[in-house]
Figure 1 (cartoon, rainbow, N blue to C red):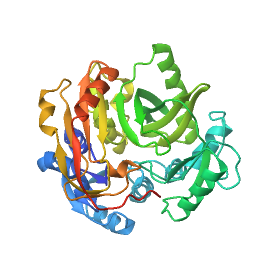
Figure 2: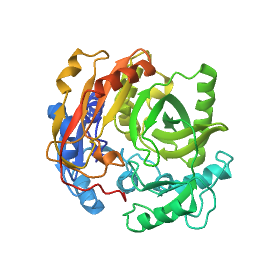
Figure 3: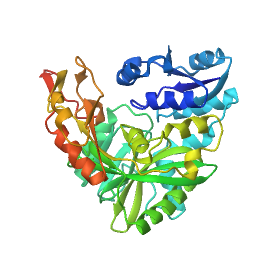
Figure 4: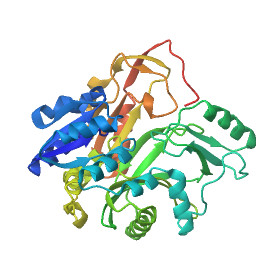
Length: 401
C-alpha cells in the first residue's frame, strides 16, 4: 500500500519515510518544487518517491492520486495545503479531518471568536480599521512564517500598517487582535477523536520589536509539574473549542500575567526542527503517529512512550543584509563543540535573500542537545554564534512583507 504526502514541511521527510516503512507502506511526495526538500531528499535514498506536479492545482493532484491503485492515506502536514488535502481525502474516501473544521482552523479570526465565546480568550477579533485597542497586531487571517504581521502601538503606526497591508499579498484577509505581552511558547500536542495529549512545551526566542522574527527555540521546557498539568488541561479545552480533533497541533501561546493566551493554532506538527526535537525528547519516531492518523488508526503515542531522551535547542541563522547567498563560514568548527551540534541548511548558495523581517530569509538552523532545554539552547547559541552567512549585497530589503 502507498501513503502520499501533499507537500511537506522543510524537515522531517526522512522520519516520515521511516514511519511509513515501519507500517509496511511506500511513501510518495507530491511537490511543485522539490528544491525545498534538498537537504531531506539527500538523506532519503529509495525510501521516498517524488512526483513533480503543480500542487496548487487540486484537479492535477487528484489525477495523480487516482492513478495510485493501492492508495491507503494522504498526509497534508502544512498550513498552505491543509484545506486542499482535507478536501482531496474526503473526495477519495480516505481518512482525514473534516474540511469544515480545517476551514475554521485556517482562519485566525474564526478561531479567536470561538475561543472568546467559550471564555478561553479575553478578546475576540477586532476591526483593523476602527479599533482603538492598543497595542494590537494586524495580520493575515491565513498567514504563515510570520509574514504579513504588523505590531502597532499607536493610531499612526496602525495607519502605516494599513498602507503596507494594502500592497501586500494575503492568503486570507486582514484582521486585528490584541497584542498579548509576555514570553511566547508553543504547545506540541497529539489528538485523536477529541482526546489530546500534551507532548511538551517549546520555548521561543524572538527578535526585538516590531518585527518579532523567530530566532531560536528549545524543547521541552521544564515547567513545574502542576503548571504543566494545568497547561495540558487548558490546551485540551482550547483545541476542542477550535474544532481540532485528530493529529498533531502546534499552538503558539503567550504566558501573560493573567494566564495563557493563544496566538494561533496550527493543525500540524511544528515546523523548523520541532518534529526532530519531539523525536529526540520522546526517544521515539513521533512521525509514526502521523502515519497512523493518516491511516485512520489511534496513534500509539497518545498512550505514552518511555521518553527520557535528549532535550534540544536550535537557532536560526539570518543574513545581516539582503543579497545573494554565497555560503557560510564557521561550519567546520561544529564538530569540536559540546552538544553534538548539527547543521540543517534551509537555503542554498545562489538564493536571493530579500525578506529580512520574517523566516523567509533564514539560511539554516543549528541544533544541539543537552539534558535540559535550557542547556541545549545555550549550546546551540554558542555553536550558531560562530557561523556567518556570506551574502553578496545588491538586493533591496522588502520591508512591507
